[in-house]
Image (cartoon, rainbow, N blue to C red; front, side, top):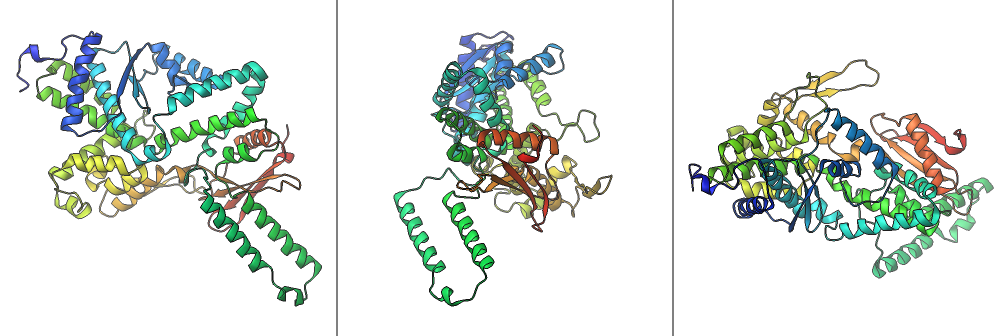
Length: 516
């Protein structure tokens, strides 16, 4: 059917929507998404909510079902103020990575917008959630809603039993550590019986290596003997506690000597919520780029089939253009790269390279340039990459030129920036690697680990911050965070900053030196 088909073939006519219109449009979008694009999605559940409910969802990390905390109320007031003053619009939708995938649509949307966000969220985001390896590895879409319901009820019961102030105190401390409450490189330890036997064997081998009668014949000073013994004790202590440990909240939950069982459970809830959102933070460009490309492609296919009128397509394109708008670096509105704009541009660029490659594209992307199958190429990219690896693998010189990207060097001792690379032959590799690195959360967030604690001694919790490129922690927030760690640990907490390249100690502090 062509776009010149009669008005009887149109999915909707005016701007008003009804549940019948939504249902009919959803079926048409689903047919294109699954049949033409080859998407694979969870079952969908669409909910219609008001602007107040959307603001409420905004304020609680996009999760309408979550426990109470004063910070969510503060965010609500802030977002509500900006919305009422007309300084910020609301998102057209919110989508939850769950099975079934739940999409919340605003009742104020026109029918054209409802169609656009249904394609965007219910099929674009939904496909990404179900198929990207990070979400498959770290989240459980079938269990998250039940868990959040349990968490909300559990925190509520704790408030009734122990008081709001006590619960709030634990949540405050736990929330300050959410960025340090994820397993970045491994799953939570699950020791199997075979692994446990292996650990016993390693322990015996270690003791055999350490013990030797020959050592008794060597003359040693008393100080040396004590030092060796202390080092061995420390080594054994760290091994028994699986140190160093990157997940601070996990360590406190398992090891703190002062926490009650209900307090440990609250730490576990906050830790699981932090881990649930971690893949989304690593795939912002890809996730939004996928959803934007999907809604753009589906809407144009429906128009080509004569199911959407020209006026409604223009309305959708107007909203689409606002979403992918990218201000220039010298524009007062510039606040960094828009993930929708960058992601969508990259998806379109991949489609171009597959269908109409240049000689430059063939040099840079010999694996897929000119293969003609842009659907399979995109499906593979969406499934197997996060933002950093996606940019390193797929950002082309053509797009670097089109978006006029360049990189800056920022030296702390200088009072100005230096343009290190621009969008030319010499700068492509540098611009691409610099941009990719800026999306690596492992490089951009402080690397703080628990390195030692003597549970039979002074019980001081020793943390180490591995400082990269001389970037140390802000003193005010650092000290405030340490107080929260002490609240959960119960004893003194020390933090040492060590330069990653030289191993030099840059700073050292502890809670016993901080004013209350």
